[in-house]
Image (tube, rainbow, N blue to C red; front, side):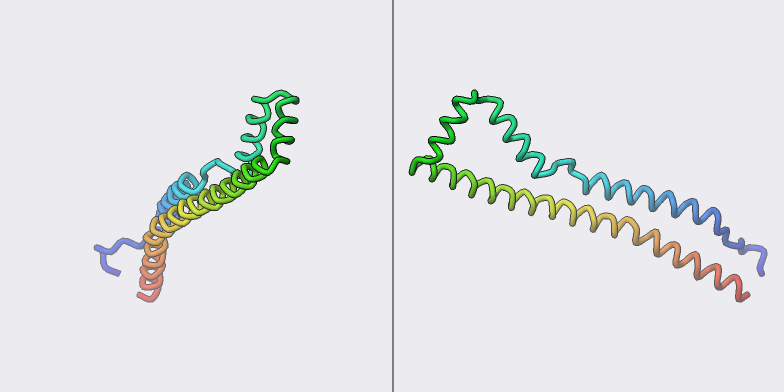
Length: 127
């Protein structure tokens, strides 16, 4: 072994890559977690809507929904809600995909460095 070559230190390397991986995981979680659940949003909307009406007014809404025009409005509202939910899921999926791709990009150099470090350790063992 030459004096200019330092023996690779696995402990130092583990600490460094562990910190890098933790940072990459934190970035992914931050990017992927929106904190918004569509089911919770729908329930909250229903609660807010109902809170704006008296029991009598809610009964009026129910009666209205049984009229031809009321039925049409209700169907249109359900369709719009369904389309919004579909669009919202697409947005969430895109956000998660972008976050996942970023995670992969963040961890690839870490894994590459680990592989190189292992190669160097193996090379050192065979000297």
